[in-house]
Image 1 (spheres, helix red, strand yellow):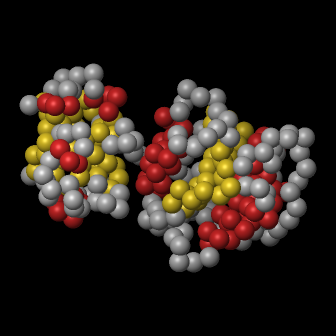
Image 2: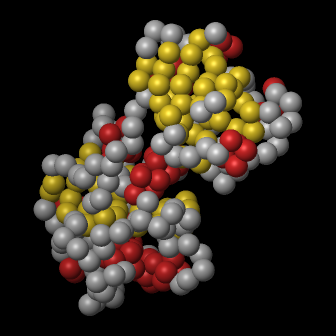
Length: 273
């Protein structure tokens, strides 16, 4: 397959990849090979390939957490696609000066909702001229999303991919609720250190909840809120504002998930002392 000519000379050099393909098999390498065959100057950056298989919710949160760290004119190629080969749509989204490419299954909805004040265009990917020849029914990452990303990198106008859409599929990532002296939420994500990221947003808490007066409750545990790990003794639990702007729960020098059996969607409560 050859890269199609375009009158747009803009080259978007960074293409990120986020999948549930893991690193044991050749799937990620095949996607990168397809991209580099069409756009040899592209820089492929792995966000992660360790999303739990088919876990759209975790993919949506991971994309939103990493999105702002990349420069403008980045293409975010995201393939967590349990509905591959079905009637689910393939989509490309222009979000400001960036692009999102992948299946329309909710992966992009959390980020798009957060960035809703930006200029957004959504297109269904239907124009087969931008696909690999004879795409398989089960590997759209290589045969549709990778070549489309490469073409966008070389300036193909997004509207050439197919018809414009007005909305995308949603994924349910719950929002915390805030009261005068209490807030209720849950765990959204647990990283490989065993730190639990909740849906309490720092910007939402700070107007009414002074950090030195916050106490976290999860299960039977009441957890102090501090600035960083070293503010508690080794082996003690702590709550803190994490680097992504959410309240997190950790164990200094250990794994909070294993220590107190934390799990995604587990309820967490914040109260003022």
